[in-house]
Length: 187
Image (cartoon, rainbow, N blue to C red; front, side, top):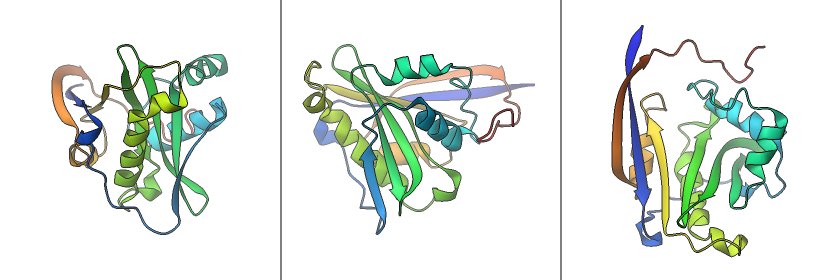
């Protein structure tokens, strides 16, 4: 069966574009995973994206994960709720002083608790100051991301509240996705 998939691309072109959310509350902290770990990143990827059709990285080998995570300017920021991973965001430096938010989301049990806006605010600020941690990179001039009609119902509104502006929309007919793989594909 065919369905319509809409993909929106959004951007910020200045650090002053960021409209930070209020803090998420007691017990929530955000930390950078400074040691690239394919196992941790794959866990976060499947735990966050398993119910919203994130499948593009499922076939990657461990070596491919390592290659992605060890690129200069790639960072994983994790939100914790009293020590438990609640969500994450992956930043990736690109050409022309651009940083892409490649993945962003919360594990299902942590959605709707005001953690997402806080995590997104924190990580976007870290995208803007990425060159401070990666001196071989130029200062960031643009932060961008894309979201689509398969993402959670509050995703687009959260990006817009944080100051992202729409710069492109693509609509395509595609095969309707089957059941989501869940956090344990193939299990």
